[in-house]
Image (cartoon, rainbow, N blue to C red; front, top):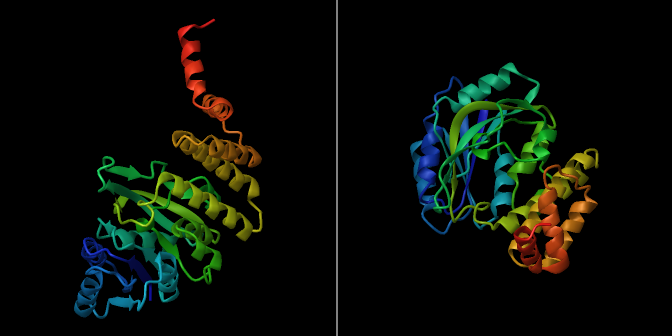
Length: 313
């Protein structure tokens, strides 16, 4: 089998048909399977999945959970069922917008055996009304290493294709996290480079039912910090300095959130963690000064700051 497409889905009744249709619309010179891991949804998702499986029995393999496993366990077991040389990812609430997506990515990976991941740009559509559609990532196309992923996750899951087989069973520590795609990108990319194509190939939905997008900014930052800390240990602390710089940036963001929430103690705690992780980020002196002032004197620092501006020496 050349390729396995993995789609994990839970309560995606509004989206799953479009996701699967975008996979079945792919024009390829090779055969591929579609593993749909349906995690005991409480809406009509399972009925839609079964309808697709009946209509495309030689293409779609449904994995129907008898009880809800949770996103990470469901995803891990779906990956274990893959038979393909390559694995493409598409969550049940996203979809592809180019019929040559997987063909072009497989062609690239076949021609570049030193690469383990091929991804592309995606359109982010916010269905919560929080913003206009945007294209992500904004970085230049080309090749990157797995260490580049420590700073930010630029591999949009709905665009990712992996060279499969060399990763082995996913570590158990992944099961404790609310995000699994980012560390998985890193684990796969240990075996080869990452290529970012310039084309927009998928749509990533931001909606109230999304596992990640439904989390608050605070919870997202805490989950990312936890993941990077565990990843550092998993990699044998070989990249501690790089990972700690990434954690320091997260701690600074956490301090900003804590100040916004009016918590001096949490602001202090995150600033101390920022310092312990070697926080030396150029261009943030004014922000650090404001956070430090708030930590020392609370909201009074704003009054003093306004007074100083009104009566400069």
